[in-house]
Amino acid sequence: MAVPHSFLTRGLSFTHEEPSSVTSTPSSPSSASEDSRESSPAFDSPKPAAGFDNVVDGEPRTTLQAKDWRAPANMHKKTFWERTWSEKLLTSTLMSDNHHYLKETNRGPVPSQPLWCDHAFLIPTTFAVPVLQHICFMLGWQWSKPVAFVIYFFGLLFFFQLSALRFDIMGNKYGLFDETFRGRDRIPDESVDIMGGGILMYFIFRVGYNITFKYDPTVAPLSEFTWTYILRWQAWFLIMDYFFYAYHRATHEIDFLWSIHALHHKSKHPTMAHAVLGTHAQHIMEIIIIPTLTSYIVPLSCGEQWVLYLCLAHIETMGHSGIRIHAPCTNTWLSCLPFGAEITIEDHDIHHRYGKSGKNYGKQTMMWDTVFGTREYRVETANCPTRWINDKF
Image (cartoon, rainbow, N blue to C red; front, side, top):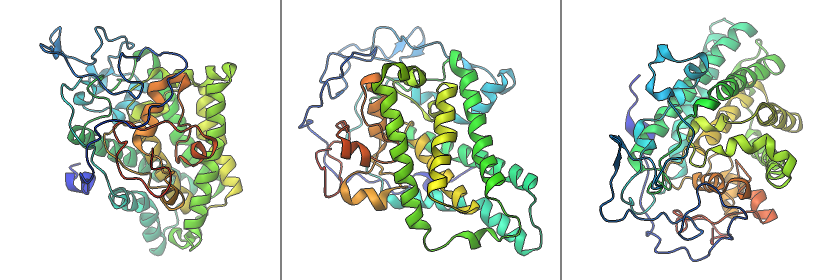
C-alpha cells in the first residue's frame, strides 16, 4: 500500500547549530566492547582516511573496522517463500539495505522533530480499530471475543508494518546515528528463531490480554475513553518505566542477572527488529510481567489499553531504530518535557553501544535515570534543544 511520504516524515526542521564539540565528557565504560574505538569516549565517529574504499569484496562496506565481526546474517538474501516461519514473522521489520551500509561523510546538524509529527501518525493509526469497532457497534454488530481477537491482531500487524515503513523512509532520508563508524546490524541467523518467538509472544499477549480481561462486546468502544485518560496515561507510563528501570538496571549491574539480558546487547547498532532480541526470560519479564503489573495499579479500559499499547510499541521500536533525529518521546512528554527528562532515540542508541556498562536504563522516559544519576551524555544531539532542566544532556 502506497503511503505518502509527507504523512510519514513531515515536520522535521533544522533549527539548531551543529555541535562543534561535546562540552562534557562522559565517564568511560568499565569494560571495552567490540565496538571500542580510538576516539573520544563520547563516541565521536572517526572520519574515513584518504583513499577510503567504501566497497569490500564487491559489497558496500558495513563498518570502519578492518573486519566486520558481527554474526552471519543471511535472511535478507532469501525470498519470502524461502524463509522459515520465524523469518516470515520478522519480514515486516526488515529495513532497506541502505540502513546497513557505512556512510563516508557526516550529514551535518541533526534535525529536530516536533511532537505533533508523531501525534499526526499515531492518532489515526492507533484509533483505527476502535473506530471501526464503534461503527460496527452502532450498526448493530457486536464483535464476539474471537472476532475481536482476530481483527485486533491484524490491526496490530498493520500498525507494525506501517511503523516499519515510516522508520525506513525516515532512516534513508535523515540517516542513522553513528553511521560513519558502522551501519545498522542485520538480524543474525543464530537469533532468528528466538526473535520470531518473541514477536509472536508480543502479538498474542498484547492482544489476548486485552480481549480476555478487558473486552466487553456490549460497550461502545469510544465511550470507554474518559477525561481522566491523559492523567492515567502519564501515571501508567511513569510507573511502568520505573519497574522497567529497576529490572533493567539490575540486569546490567548484578552479574548473574546479566545472562537474562546479554543476548539483547549482542546488537550494538540495532534496528526496530532488535527490540525483540532477547532470551525467553527477558520476553516474559518485558512483554508480560511489567506491563500487566502496571495495568493492575493504573486501571484502563479495553480501548484505552489498546491505544496505550500501540504507543508503547511505537516507542519501543523507534528507540531501537537509530534514526538520526531529535524526537522526544510522545508518550510521556506532558510529565517529562518540563524537566528535560524526555527520552530520545539517541539515548537508547548510546545505551546499546556501551553494552553491559551502558547507562540510560529507561525506555519510555529519562525520569528515573535523572533521579538516580544514571544518564549518559548525548553526542550527536548534544546541542539539540531540551527544556528547562538538565540542559547539559
